[in-house]
Structures are given as structure tokens and as C-alpha cells.
Length: 342
Image (cartoon, rainbow, N blue to C red; front, side, top):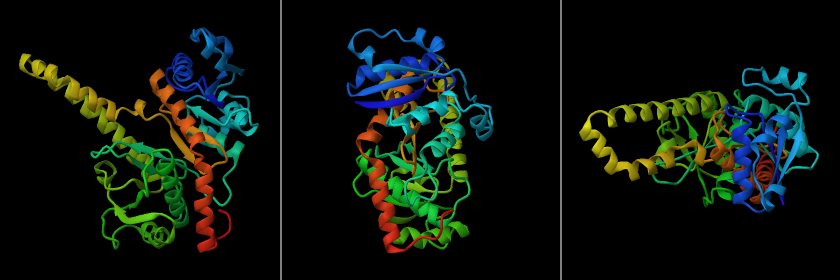
């Protein structure tokens, strides 16, 4: 049985969305057990599951919550019994194999780093985000916010971790890795890009050169690495663009009888497009490089998104991603001994 701790109080629609998402997950996957962590009096009323699957939903009571607007480090220090901190503690104690949180991202990263620690040899953890592409083959981008200031060595390790995730979870053979830059030519880019290029060439991955922003969506690369500042800006820009295009489409397709009739004919294709672009279908973003599973779901997650985040946590555990990361980082150290801990 795969035990997963879920922050029942995290996200815009908690605890209803988290409780309902947990129910969907245990109904869909017979090998998982979900521990709902939060104020039991507020969470339990939203759990109406009956039958054998109901026995695979457990409760871990705590009343403290880290809010979306809380400063992560201060909140974790003041609220050590918060739902997000307890999720991380359950993994550390071995009562859960992974945690899922849809609340304060910085708090989830901080709680996991404090409770789990880093995998041996890993300098910085990274958040991996899966983007849909025109070819249907997903592209993993990291880091998207865990480590905003990076060195060349960190980017090389992100590449190893992202490759491990793409290969083991997304089933991509020999992932093609790119380094995000302002041009595909090796001479282009800032100092960090120039310093990282030789590190990536020596890493035990298939490094194929610089990637531009458009390459995130065209399917040319399977993994793209960058520092967390750039990655997070890109992630938020992509979310904003998708929401803007969706709003424009709704306005234009509903304008006039001809457009509405055309929309009816195109409805199956439009639904397919929505599925490919919907963050709810991709589940959670894994925090790679820590000694445990930590999946971060979108703050606006609905029950389906929570279910898919729990599915992603299950896949992370089954694929033994951390073992593959340890092998890759060890191979890097064998080829070129790293400098002291950062």
C-alpha cells in the first residue's frame, strides 16, 4: 500500500476539493492510502465515501494552517503543527511515502527541505513542471521556483534530475535535454548559461544544446533547465497566456449566430484542446532532489486536479525516481568531484 499525506487545508477550494479529490483517488487506485491532514472537524463532512475504498482514507488532525499570503519561513517556524508541516513530518517518520500540497508553494518546499533533507550529493532541489507540446510528447522544465539563484553545477544537476523524472515517470527514452537561453547558438546567453554548458556536456544525460522559450512548447526538447527565477516567471507567463487565450476564445466564439454554430461543430476538438492544456490533467509538480516524495499542486486545484496530483505522487513512488537521481548524481561526482556543499 502506498501511503500519501495530503494537506487537506491547502488550496483555494480546500477542504472540499482536497477531500473529494482524495475520494476520487482511492476509488481509481486500489494500491494507495490517503492521509488527510488538517482540521478533522472541517474535513470529515466532505468525505462521503462508502464501501471498501473508504477504509483507505485516514485522518491526521491538526488545526494550524499556513495561508497563501504567509511568509513561508516565518509561518513554518511559528506553526510547526500546521497541516503542511505535518504532511512532511509523516513522510519523515515513514508513515507516508510522499506528500501532496496545493497551498503555499514556498511553504511546501520549505517543509520538505527541512523534514527530508537533500538526497546525497544534490546541491539544490528543483521544482519540475510538465508542459504540453505540439507533438504530444511532454516537456519537463526545472527549476520553476525552488532555487532562484543558481550556479552552473546546480543546472547540471537539474538536468540529471529532470532526465530521471522524464525517463521513469513520463516513459521518455533517452530524454533530450536543453539549456534555456536567448538563442540556440552556444555563444549566446548570460554568464550562467556559458558556465553551465560544459557541465551539461559532461553530465550523464543526452544534452543537445541551447533551448529558446518557444522550444518549451514545440516538442524539440524533453527536458529544459534554467534557474528558478527564470523558470517561475516563464511558468506564470504561460499560465497567464493560456487563461488570456481561453477568455478571448470564449468571447469570440460566442459572438453571433454563425460563430456559435461553428463552435458547436468544433466542440469535440475544443474539448480535446482543453484537456491537453488543462493543468488539472497533469497533477502535481514534483520537488526533485529531496529524500522523499513531495508533489505541489496548483493553488486553484479542483477535485480532479487533486486526484491527479495523488496519481502523480503514486507514480513518483512506484518509479523510484529518487534512486535514479542518486545514480545520476553519483555518476557526475565520479566523473568530476564536486566542490564543497553550497
